[in-house]
Length: 297
Length: 235
Image (cartoon, one colour):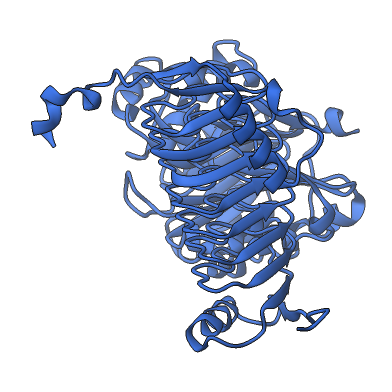
């Protein structure tokens, strides 16, 4: 069992309070996932040509100024064990610089808008430690984890990056992840954990690299992934949702004039303003749902 | 005899859920107490009005979470909103009405009573139903009435894939299309007695704009291995 939440602001007032809403939703999903929690927040785009990296250091009191200097970047913000650093290069070069100067750091996300924070512990504690309440942004995904397939670690928490400004959260478990991981490693996709969701993220990354659209990559999951899943994918413009054809894992979507929200259970949406009167529906099994700015504008 | 009954109002924004359910159970245990209840601000809470065992009239204003009115006996529970997984699961008797839509496994394993859904029901509606009557104004998802044993499922809209898979003796009535029949489920003749049964169920559900003659009937072909006497020793 795990919990998923997603929130997409359609009004400036929701953008302003995105962090507070996200934290409230996450707290409602604690009972589905008390082991670990994580969020991807889409906010404050870096200028064209620049790359925003979220870095994680396992070392307490990391010297982030030295890290930023080492990769020729500037610190945007530091939250607990994570820092957002903006580097004046493309993403491939920025990540190469991290590997070269500080190979022990983990790149949690890369892109122009995404920031990704995750850690072990209760969701409420995580939200407080990472000071998420004040965050503003256009949209965000969150996850609460109850581990089934691999260890409870920061790296094994969700979301997982699946490419530039892309991330994945997952409720469920995959049974063919070892086979798939071997196939993807041969294709040059790197994995840091034994986690099944990281394989799904790697699968999407590989599929997108091979030229698939996000919709096609998600549709490919229906054929190639064996197991239970409700996926939510964060993109620069919005988010996508997919449930496996058997639909063992729940999901509910809701929309008002001010927001679009997704959650494993409705009580995570009930904390949003105007939820009582929201239009609500359950995503159909085996159908890819993509919501983006263009669709809402 | 009182002409009107003042409803006991419980606000779940301030009253803990366990207190509410305990108060509802206490009426059955003590044999006295308010018979009419109005619950506000459920905000998707799980197990609202579960395990009732008295002739109560409970109206819930808002959306509820999992297993609302589960194990219901005798009571009437009306949800003025949507319900999540397992509404009225294992209901024994009474009436459960949902004015919105419901998620998966509505009426699962229910032995009796009537469940009415005015919106749609998701996957596995009436899974392993054991005598309950279920009337859905909209459509039902895949694997509905999976291993259904007895009772009636009336679907005014469409049914998803694998309807009635491994069904025993339940009767399934669908007015719209069926995406696919499950193993050992077949279409059967709609005789006068069946039209009459659908008419009666629609009437009890308060649905008066749907004609009983428009439905088709589905049920068990009784060809699965469990219907063969030679396999009786396997159980």
